[in-house]
Image: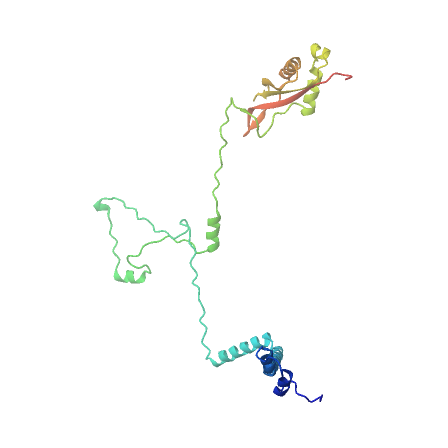
Length: 284
């Protein structure tokens, strides 16, 4: 068989299908295969051509973009705007003049009009002073003008006047003599201080025999009033431990010497005072 035989020729197709049923469909497909191949090759070539053109355009656009970055484009626009402004005639700039509002003056510093006082006198005592035309010409005062008190235009004086603050001294509120305070400006003080108070209580405390036999010990908190004279007033137990211990704590507190009274607004007042009394057996 020759190598230059065209397999797509109609003669070769007829030779292949000789003696066969050509109406089956394979004959028609083989006969039209050459056209399909040609169309496929044309479509492929067109697609490749389009891709090549797009690639070429893309490279061209990118090169131009690299040659003219955004900064250069903006600079070109700025230069163009500057040239347009240079071409326009210069207009004189209008300077805004802000009117300075005069600072309001206090009523005490402002110029005030004098009030004319009327005095009733007898007709015989009234002396009318009539000035001549020459005297009126020589005087600097206009006829019919109103006499004013001269104030001041010095802003420093005005500001000093504005900054003046009138402070009213508050009078201390009256203190009720019978009121018992919980918190005061100056607390009551035992002579010698708190250490001396605890020592005095320890020295004068007698341990109840019944509580000692029953081995009862602990702390009793007593609250009492230090009166405005410094003496011990009302006494109450606010934390109990044992009735016998409570009674002994109250007895010792009532026998305390005078305190330095507490003060409120500089006056001696009645104040509640809290004192813990500790009962502890020796050797326990």
